[in-house]
Image (cartoon, rainbow, N blue to C red; front, side):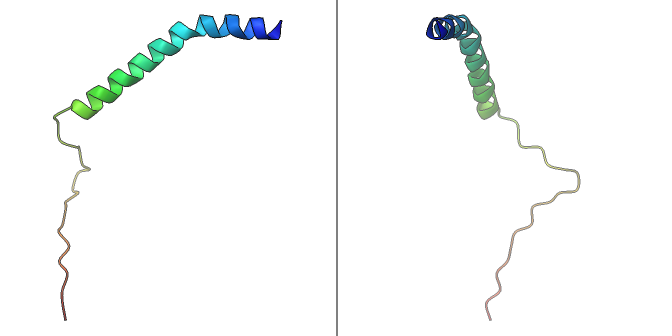
Amino acid sequence: MAADTAIFVSKRLQRAAFAFMCLFAAQLVLGVASCEPEQVAMGAVRVPIALSHP
């Protein structure tokens, strides 16, 4: 009986899990495909590191 209940619940949750995975994949694709530059904190500057040789 426990196995039947588990299968019934898993069948009911398949659509919700699939929808969640689709939303997650869409968010991932949109995040990777965005052409906007990364936002940096105000005043943050990238400074090249110069190595000095003795």
